Image 1 (tube, rainbow, N blue to C red):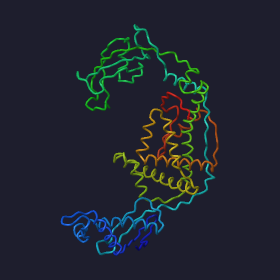
Image 2: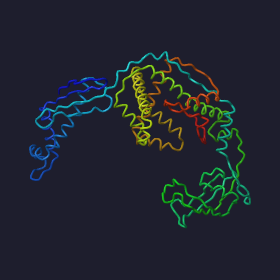
Image 3: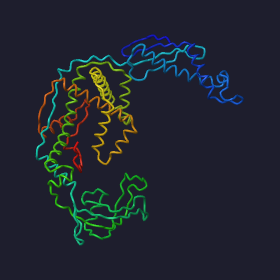
Image 4: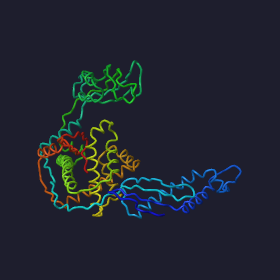
Length: 456
């Protein structure tokens, strides 16, 4: 095999590769011998078909198979020989091929740029620590108590009002006919939350234990059975019980019910939970500040094929007119992502940072513990999607790099209250024309319905 650099312009290199026809003939002969064991032709015993007969019948396809294999092998060898760092898939342009001829082709290769890192010590950022006020902890405690309220039986002659819990069996029909899922047993509804079907709760106001009531409702537009979407439905409900909310006493017993040792421990766990949510949001801002400085202080030529590939991934779910409208901004964002990826990876390699399989497994276990009741689903997701584990490994690798950078730069620690934290997060999330940035969620805007506090 003969390899020469035909041209080199910027990050694009074109190699000329020639594979001697003798090597190709040797590979052809080897493949024909292998096929002798596999090919069955009329008039010949198994394994005894002469190579020339196989070649006469299947020569073109065998040659194509052999050349395809040679191209894969020699492409890798050519790149290794010239010590090129390839960005994306090289393009092959066949110049000469055919039986009895040398294989002559060109490789068009887009290479990764050479990365020279500047000193990070001059970079500045702020690491925020949020002090959670007692008032916020108490509000969260009340929210948890409301979400985990207990109910007690009403007298049989007492009617249901908003806030009561009604327990019932139902049998539903559409146009007088039953359908899949048209029956339910022991359904529990807290009236006023409207969690079943729109307008269903208000029709249950005034019912008593042992009543039977016919309710009118409309099935949702997103019903799994399309033929039932938006259908008028009649529900015959047999009221099994009506319960009223018990006053929630927030004490040590309640705390134990929530998985804590006592009320003091529960408050401590709530504080950690809220603090962790603020930290996640504010850390994203700190990270963005650091990445902006890294990007601004480094200049890199980027391979066009990587830019095109990143834009394709970013816009794969957009309509053509949306792609065109945001074409310039998408290209800018794609370049930023690729540039930062190359810079961070170079820093990680330079400092010999790695993510072990054990670290990935530990992170998956953390996710499993954080999703009680869905452990099996999370585990199966990673088992069935190797790319998800690889993506998680990439995220952990980036986290390690960012943490190392934080230890090297001028990082100021600042303690703030939740009001100040909200202001910083809101400021960060303000729309900024001409720029693109990831938004971070304020803990006060995040929707959560905790049942038990996790001791992670």
